[in-house]
Length: 89
Image (cartoon, rainbow, N blue to C red; front, top):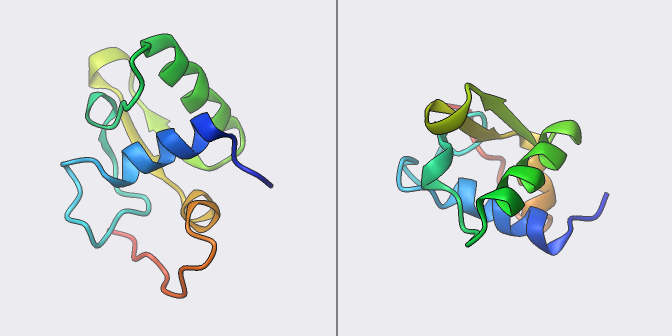
């Protein structure tokens, strides 16, 4: 499976969220507003929906209370050459 530019951008936003400790990003939920790297909220929302359908992201809640987490599958696609496995929180 290949990632689109927008999908890669959204996954990177989740991984780079200020709410992560930088070590345990897989299955670690962060506030959706903290990982939106898009200037258009609709673009971000549509991209996240696509990632959820593909099993690359898990979403919980709605609106400002929504959280997102990258799955192991999503992490592996984002970092194909990474030899380490991200630890679950």
